[in-house]
View 1: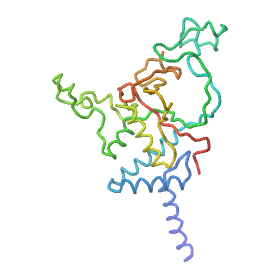
View 2: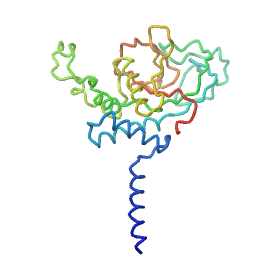
View 3: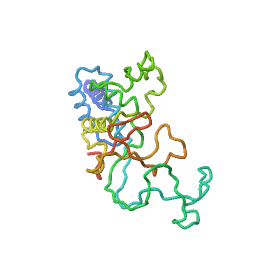
View 4: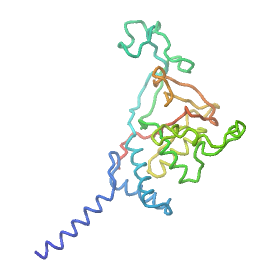
Length: 256
C-alpha cells in the first residue's frame, strides 16, 4: 500500500510533463522542446500565454508544410480549349492537339511552356495570415501594416489609418499583404530560426531586377485561381493583393 502511494504521484508528474509539450504532426518531441526553449530565450519578457501562442504558431506553420518531390516538370500555361468553363471541365487536352489550345491566363508571363527541373522541397499549403505576420512584427518591434496615417491619407483629409477604417480587411485569418519582398523573406527566416529548419522565401535567380509572383491571391476571381498565373513585381513594392507562403529547401523528413 505504501509503495503504491509513492508511485501514483510519480506517474502523475510524468503525465503532466508529457502533456506540457504540444503535439506536432511533423516534428519529434525533442524538436518541439528545442523550439520552446528558443522562444523562451529570445522573448523572456513576453507573458507565458504569448510564448505558448507563438510556439503553436511555429508548430502549425511547420505542420502545414507539404512535401513536393523534385523532378522535371512543364512550367507555364499548358493551354485549354476555346470556351473555357470552370463548371464543365474536360480531361486535358480535351481531344485537341496541344498546339491548337488557347492561352488561359491573361496578362501574365506564362508562355512559352517549357521544362524545368526542381529539387525536392516543402511548401506551405496556406498563405501567411495577418494574425501570424502581426505577431512576428509586434515581437520584433516592426510597425503593423497600415496602422499609421500616410501622407496620402492626410492629403485626402483622413483622420484614421486604413487599418482602423477598414478593419475587416485585416482579420487574423486573412492572407497578409506585404509592403516589399524583403518583408516576406524576413518572416520566413524568423520562422526558420525559431523552428531550427531552413525555412525561407526562395531567392530566385541571382540576376534580374524583379521578383516572380505566382498563383492567385485572396482577391482573385475563380478564373485566376490557378498555379499557372505568373507575373513579375518590383521587390520594393507590395500591395493588398500580394501575399506569400514560406518554403523549406529540404528533401529529407522534417522530423529528427
